[in-house]
Image (cartoon, rainbow, N blue to C red; front, side, top):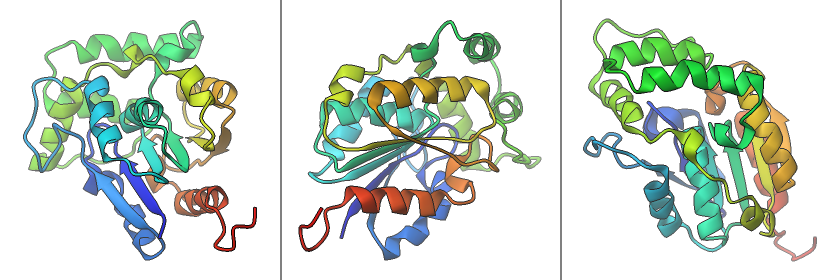
Length: 239
């Protein structure tokens, strides 16, 4: 059975982010990694995509299909280059805005989020700012559940993903196929995905309907299943 390794983004942990992908357990061996700093683990004062790329790379087996979303997609891009044993790589809207600096939409997005990230915002203040910015319609309860409160605190502790240096040459040289998914809701994220598509020779797909929450978008599981199926050798060995 093919093994799919999922890496979640900011705010939501693995359980929250990949709830709709639990149904894929019938077809694949699914591994839902929870990044350090997110529940049920303890909160960390500082979270760095470089350290977490090492963590994810250590979990990869020969022939895995790596699937990363948002901040977890940045981590996955780095991990895939460090341990290029994959059968495929899928990333949805990685906020690796450093690859598209100079794009007006990217610069505007960074002008909004960077000052807020360096402020002393409370978890609720951060969520009230961040969720609409990335096209989320999530309604916050009066009292944040403990997992969501910690998720917001973890997001504030993360090193800004625009600082990530994507190893384009190393990734482009790998033989496994890549898929880049965007949600059609943000020109800034579209700009990043355009660069990844071009420089990695990646397939590109757009799934509207869920904003930045791509794993919840209609058609996500079908798209991923099709891509993974085309990246998997047939049982007969035929191409």
